Length: 352
Ligand SMILES: Nc1ncnc2c1ncn2[C@@H]1O[C@H](COP(=O)(O)OP(=O)(O)OP(=O)(O)O)[C@@H](O)[C@H]1O
Ligand SMILES: [Mg+2]
Image (cartoon, rainbow, N blue to C red; front, side, top):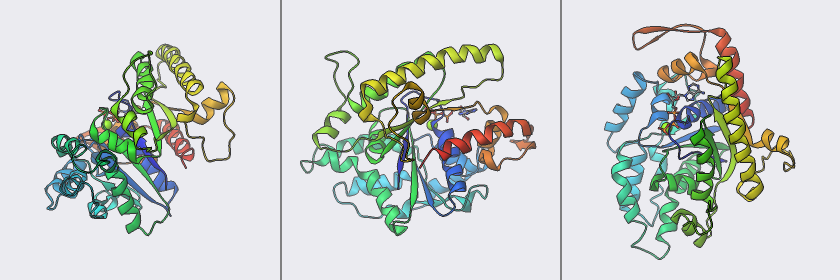
């Protein structure tokens, strides 16, 4: 029943792409489990990919946005704005069965569709956190947890796994995602600003001060006041790290090693923020064993990723050959797939 939030407050590091690939691959590897994606990003990128990609997925997304009542995350949030402190237990009405829209997605995958209305709703969600009962902040921050519980209940609490795609901003809806997740997957890319982002996540979520006397986030302070659980860091996923070109590969390596050192320092300072993987491995006691448990590298999937996302075909189901992407033919090479597929398969093997 694990709930993973995929978040980094740095934009464009692959949160949505990885949500799409991870959830689809997890569903493929675990046909007897139900998999839920909650798209808590107003850009709805992971929804678009799951629903069939750039052309068909976008059409389906627009269609779903016009359903009445609105069968999206915003439909649910609207319910909760009307009933902030008492859950109507109606969350299960807001899921879409993805394979009905896109037959490339395994039949055990369900989605609470993302919706741009989240932006407009954000201020009303924030206002719900201060009038009302004394613990209004806590109750509102559990809205998404309530949504997931409603859906699990409608599945008779069968074994399942949830992935939440987050917006980069540390906005109210990201806070709601973090309050509902048990585990955090943090994608990052090989650039200098990702090094800073590794620290920023720590300070925003766990109140780790970069400098003595720095203010701490309301999220950290309020979660602590209400003794709410924080999600634990499950893995840092270096995304698009491996490049074809040899000289850029070595330049990348320098930056990746720097970021690796930063993550190692985070572990040394705040081991309690991490989730020891439930696969029987002992708590890491060296940089090497730490890296094995908490760091993973995802290759740049080049053309395969463009086609996979644009057509809404998870990488493991993509075949080699010419693909029609918006009227133009793009070739996916078998050699690319031979590299990319095991890379994602192995990552999912590490996810409980
Ligand atoms: N492993 C990969 N290989 C190739 N392309 C990738 C890979 N991961 C992500 N991309 C591409 O990088 C771009 C940014 O990825 P994505 O939209 O998933 O980032 P994000 O973190 O969700 O962004 P935002 O912060 O805006 O929500 C997309 O075009 C995506 O297809
Ligand atoms: Mg995104």
